[in-house]
Each structure stands twice: as C-alpha cells, then as structure tokens.
Length: 170
Image (cartoon, rainbow, N blue to C red):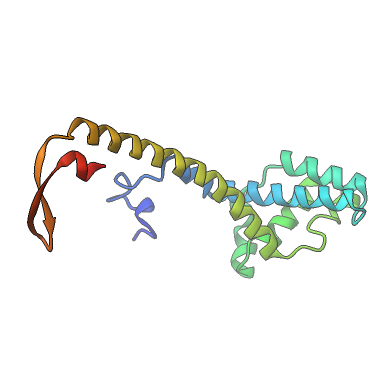
C-alpha cells in the first residue's frame, strides 16, 4: 500500500512530483537542516554567542558534510524527531570536537525543522510560480485562438446564454 500517490506503482506516473520531488526527499531535508545549523552558527559567531572560529568551522562543515538518511533512521524512530540524530551525525562528521560542541547551540529541534522546511518551500514556490506562468500563457493562447468559437455557457448544469470558448478560457 502506498503512503501517497507519489509512492504508488499504479498512480505514481500520473502524479509525478517532478523537480519539486527532490526538494522533499530525505537528503534534501538533511541538507536544508545542515544549512540552517550552519547559518545559525555563523550569526552566533558574529554576535559573540559562540567562538568565531567554531562558527566558521560549523558553517563550512554544514556545506561540505554528507549525512546518510539511513544512518539517522534508528535514532529518529526512537526520538520521533530527526534533529537529534542529525546533530549527533553532524558533530561526528566534523571530526573537530572543540568546534562540534557548539553545533545547535541554543536552538530547538523545531527551530531547525521549521527553518529547513521554509528553505525548501521557498524553492518549491519558485517552481510553482513558473508552472502557473506556463498555465496562464497557455490559457491566454487558447483565449486568443478561440475568441470567436461559440459554445453554450452553463448555469446550474444547464445551457445558458451563448458565449465563446475564448471567453471561458480567459
């Protein structure tokens, strides 16, 4: 049984998530959370909350480190939240305990998850906006091409005063 139409062997081809699908993969979520952790550390370093050297190391590592989602699965399943597993994996991957101790300094799991989601939603909105522009352009083309093609208008499921297909498309 599929969890969504995107996972469905039967319907997956009809509802392909396309480019947006990559934004909501496990890897994309981990990358976005790492970017948030890196940005948080950078700002904290600039304001003296954590040492600047540690902030720079965390920010750089957040861009370079690769964390396997499967490696976080067990801890995520036991916690019900992915951030503690991410923080542990990130600290280990940094191989710099003097800097890693400042990862996630003063943040909550919800802070990281929400900010990471917003980063991905902003990218998704760019894709959606492009799709909407394409739809509007296609509708404008239909409206122009069929401006004089008569058809019945409808009201309450019945024919009404005649209109044109171009007017309906517009």
